[in-house]
Image 1: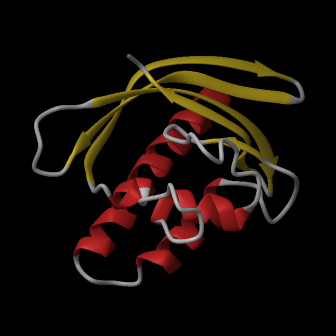
Image 2 (image 1 turned 180 degrees about the vertical axis):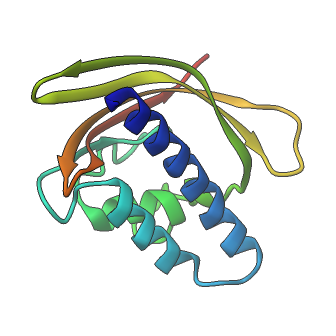
Image 3 (image 1 turned 90 degrees about the vertical axis):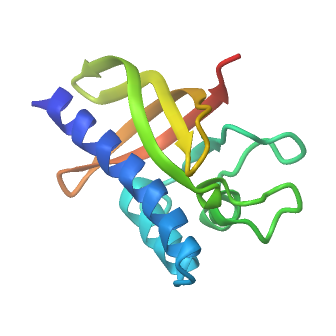
Length: 148
């Protein structure tokens, strides 16, 4: 059951990132979409979150909602150009490892990001540690980095 919830979460997370970019391409309110994405997938509203995004150098960690939003859609931190605005046409789970214990749920794997209208893909290794909130998984710890 817990593995099914992890797979559902990863599918929702991937679709959410793609949707932000689609709304941006269509001239819609992508910032609001990104805020809803963060509220749905990250536990910023409920607890402390540790977030190390994939492509950061100057400001490595984004441990609050404002900085996480900047990473996904740009604006507040100068190095951010909007990870979710790329835009991505697909995000496929390439590998998944899980650790499911009584009070801990963790997923570690590889996601394959394919940009819109470009053939090359970007492989990203990720680790998500989840907290169950209102019977839903939300990210408490997110660490990701490009696979070289």
